[in-house]
Structure formats: structure tokens, C-alpha cells
Length: 413
Image 1 (cartoon, one colour):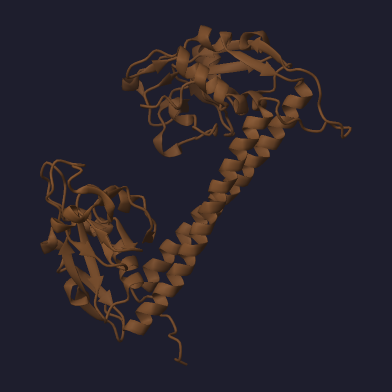
Image 2 (tube, rainbow, N blue to C red; image 1 turned 90 degrees about the vertical axis):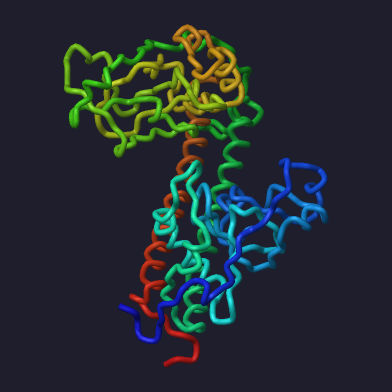
């Protein structure tokens, strides 16, 4: 049902819809590239927010002759790869034919149209052709049906949603700043460059001791080789490397769990809340996971899968401190260096036990771990706020862009 005063229009009634153009070959040919004209590609759109503010390539005057320049405040939409990604340009741009430039006419507000097109991504992806690379064309975009309010209402909707966008961007910046501050704090605290105050208010003193991890390890357990063909639909969930986050967080991943029937013969592989785990295998290209540790935070038991290690420590080493230390530069370098090269990196039990760490007293360990854990909690709180804002914006788009909830336009009673 069309809301009162609204119309169903097609995209080409509201904007000119033109495909980008660029026929220069080979890629990065200096005859065409390297000038001052922004050349925007699909990856730039995927990484943008509402407004496109950066680009990865430029054209010179020769490149512009075989391309097409679109003005500032043009909406660019991807028609290949990640179909339906959109952004508004903040400057004049040229682009390849994997992007379509949408320039709103006088009856369409650019920001409102951007938000509307953002909701069409699933619809457009569903109309893509399945060739060597999935894509859509202008015959799909131009007749795209748009539920269109009068221009003043478009502008008010755009203003409301832009407010949420600003709040989201502000929160994202706060997360980035807090993350960078934590990294700097880790570098200082985990190397002893910065010393904290003890319980009496005096700064910790004394040299840190360099030792092998095994000297402070009570036991180490390798996971069990569970057979994927015998996974159950319910039972005790199995912990894998995927539960260990690159930031040291424990990711329960309830949406992606495998289960095993309870078996007393596997009791040695049971993992519980507060247990310390380490990733012993890494298939990522940059080997960012190998050697990372996490502490189980879920209030339940798990079985430990192969290539994930369970570390139990002596009272002389704080597990929270060690978890933080596993994200330090020195431990990261060591973990990558001892793991086998190739598609899959593997860290042995011996490698883990022989790994060198520098330790302050247990009291300073705990103090450092508390400071860094509190920094993690601040970031987690901001991340939750961001998720809430994103969900609120999504809900608002659903009601405002369909007319289920009407806005009051300035001047109306």
C-alpha cells in the first residue's frame, strides 16, 4: 500500500543512471594512471561509509580521455562483486564500468536516495546474472521501483537518518582511538617501560625475569581429534581455533558450534570457565592467530578440539597477564617464527613451553592485567553501543523509508 501523498517511481525518473567507463589497458599503465583525478573502484565503495572520502587510484589527463568524470554528490553503486554497495562522492570522480553513477534530479534528495538504495542491496543481488562473475546491468537498475515521498519529506527523512550516521561514525572513532591507546599501553606495560603503582602507592621496581613459559606451567593438554562425521546436534560443544579472537577475546560462536556426546573417557579434554587456551594452528595468510591465547568466559563446559592447547599455570604466573602477553609484539614474532611455513602454520607443545617471556612479580602482573582488562571492557562497551546504534538505524530505515512512520516536515502542524 502506497502511503498518502507518496508515489511509486522508477530510479531513472529520479536520477540519471550511467555506467562508469574506462577502457585503458594494461592496469596501472603510466600513460593513463598517476595524475590528480580520483579514480574510484569497487573496493573503495565497499570500504566507505555514507560519503566516499578516499580512493586508491588516480588518472591523468590521458586517462580521463578514455573515462568519464562525475561530479561531487553523485551516488556510486557497485554492479559487480559486492553488488549494491553505495556511497556519495565528496569530490569529482572517474570510475570503471563495474560502478554506476546515479545523479539525482531536482525531485530527489541525494542523501534520501542513498539511504533508499542501501535497502535495495538484497533485491539487486537476487537479480544478478551468474556468469564468470556475478553482476547486474542498467536494465536492472533503471527500472528499479522506488517508494517516493515529496521532496520536503525526503529531506526530513535524510536528516533524521544522517543523525544516526553521525552518532555511528563518532562511536567508531572512539573505538579506533581506544584500540590505539590500548595498543600503546600494552607496549609500555608488557615491556616494563611503564611501571604502575603498587597497593601502597609506590611505583613497582626491580628487573623483570626472563624465563621459559614451562617454568611457570603446571600442565599442558592438547585437544582431542574429534571426528566430524560423528558430530551430534546437541551435547557438549567443541572448542576450536575459531573461538580464539585476534584480540584475545573468547568467541563462543553459538551459531557455529559442533557437539559431542558426554563421555567420561574424555574428561581430560573438558574445558571450563576461566581456563586458558592457545591456538596451535593457523591457516590465515598473515598467520595472525598462531600463538594467541584466550580465557573461556562462558558459564558452561566444552570439549577441547585438536590443535587447541589448554594451559594450566602455577601460582607464580597470572593467566590474565599471560593472555595479554600473547598479543605482545615479542610473543607474536616468536609464534610466527617457530611455526612451519606454508598454507598451515603449526606451533608444537615444545615450542610453547620453550617460549621466552619476561615476568615481573605476581603482584605487578595482576596490576597490569587489571589495567589492560579494564581497557578491553571499555572497548567492549563502545562496541555494544555501536551495535545498538546500527540496529536502531536499521529499524528507523525500515519504518521511515516505507512510510510506516511519517515525519513532520518543517512548517507543518
